[in-house]
Amino acid sequence: MHYNFGVALFHHIDTRVMWADTDAAGIVWFGVFMRYFENAEEELFRALGRDRTGLLRELNIFMPRTSLACGFRSPARLGDEITVGIGVADLTDRRIEYAFDVRDRHADRLICQASYRVACVDAASFKARPFPPEILSLLGPARPNGPVSV
Image (cartoon, rainbow, N blue to C red; front, side):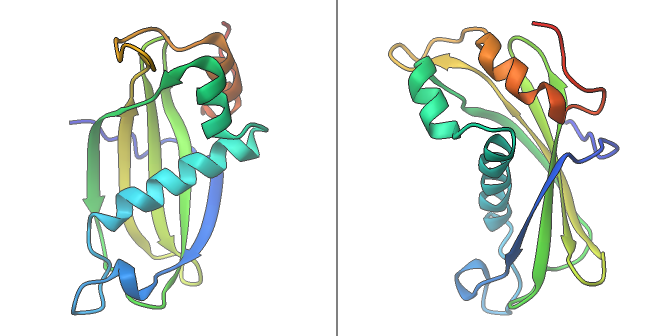
């Protein structure tokens, strides 16, 4: 299990908990958090200057998730305005680990913290491969210690 909750979060997105996100009690269903994390990752790429989908197509790669760890602290409820933070906890030629937190936007109440790992595979063969330098360079500034040399 991996938790890099001490990572400085580089980018934040704001959203509102919608009806479709919740269970019958009006609390966000745990699986929805993965969508929030994916949205934050998508927006991180945009904040760094690239559209993720276009970049992956251009590089002929996919970035499948290989693991997820999540710790819930308090519920997010229907109508809550929340902020999802993302940072790059670890970046190697074979793995990216993102760190996330979700907070109530107005009370700064911690809702959950999470991390997931991403691998790189060739889009045609789905065989594991190193990340292209373009990905490593792009995500470098989102690391707590700044860019990496590629």
